[in-house]
Length: 209
Ligand code: URA
Image (cartoon, rainbow, N blue to C red):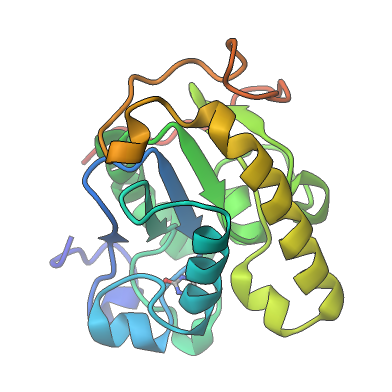
């Protein structure tokens, strides 16, 4: 990935930003694209948005061994503007990452991350806080943590959706997850895995390059 030149972002990037977390998290956050701090360090969510995410995760009882974080775009877009062409170019990498980490639950952060997984144009305001079925996994959309810095209403919604996620976590977490080990994936909607709203399957990520 460090040598990828599939899109124009390769010219302006400092580092390719791939993933932070354990080898087999059962919950994977998927953000939009690296910002300045991430581009410098080569690690996702190390800036302000990352601190908001960490705080929410810790408060809801998630342990560092249970979750990881990546982005739909792995190189920093100029002016931090989401670049759909780059998202498309990055998709095989994201597909490979999701397949190798094999999380039970995917939590998309923000509208652009959500759009990369669900084919229908579902507004994030409508989709957030509701579990969806996606490719044999649970997809739980949320607002982007940075949104909470811009509006009180978004901050309240973030809190509310985290409460819901906190309620659902125990039903998705397998018996071994607390030890940081991987649990076999049960199809979403099966007994004991929380209520998953049935939706048409999301866009299929292409196979690994
Ligand atoms: N940092 C990231 O890595 N991704 C985002 O979406 C925002 C900040």
